[in-house]
Image (cartoon, rainbow, N blue to C red; front, side, top):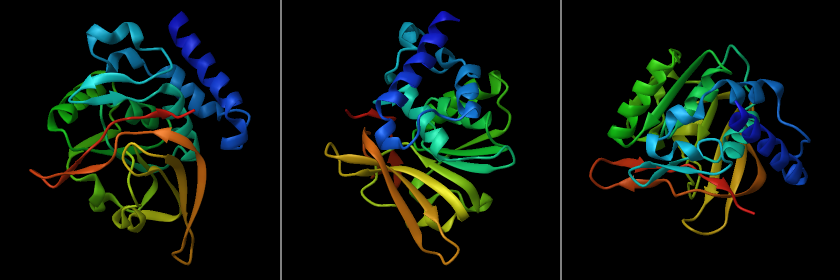
Amino acid sequence: MKEMQQMLSDIEWEVKLTRGMIGKEALSERVMAAMRQVPRHKFIPKALREYAYQNGPVPIGFGQTISQPYIVALMSDLLNTKPSDVVLEIGTGSGYQAAILSELVRQVYSIEVVEELATVARTHLRELGYNNVEVHTGDGNQGWPEHAPYDGIIVTAAAPHIPQALIDQLRTGARLVIPLGLPYSAQELMVVEKKPDGEIETQDILGVAFVPLVENPNAGKFHKSNGQHSM
């Protein structure tokens, strides 16, 4: 598909553009193969599918978006997964990031606060055959302790601090990829690694623009929206 190839080329171009910040000249072949395999247009409302393979976020309803492809690819790469891994995603959204992860690991558990989005994501994932993804409607700040510890955790909304529950549910030596920062101000994509002594090591990657992870006063859950690279 010509549009898909253009998206992949755009991702490669942005990697080169940001290589000084992300510390690499190219993303892993496994991640790029996953980006090539997953049909992004299937996770986007039909009225907006002409934008499916552009390198930018696209609205999916409920004030939320599907992330810029470069950010999806970068965050997936930073998670540094193996095929045998079990990972947790905070913020299912359209289900696209979960589908990418499903190509990379054995099992994906994903939490979404907006019940309608969770329902649609489950449907899309099931119809496309991503049977190693389980979607739960709940409070992402609390993680999903039943399946912990995880070999990686990815968060798709900006938090003012790292939720302790996610650190607790992260396997020793594993990574948490999360955007940190206050609402509508400077945010930084971070990689957090849990050390054997329980300490955490953090690495700043690059500036990003994500809608904040906030509490839902009606349900005690969080709202999320996928982001994009902030130049």
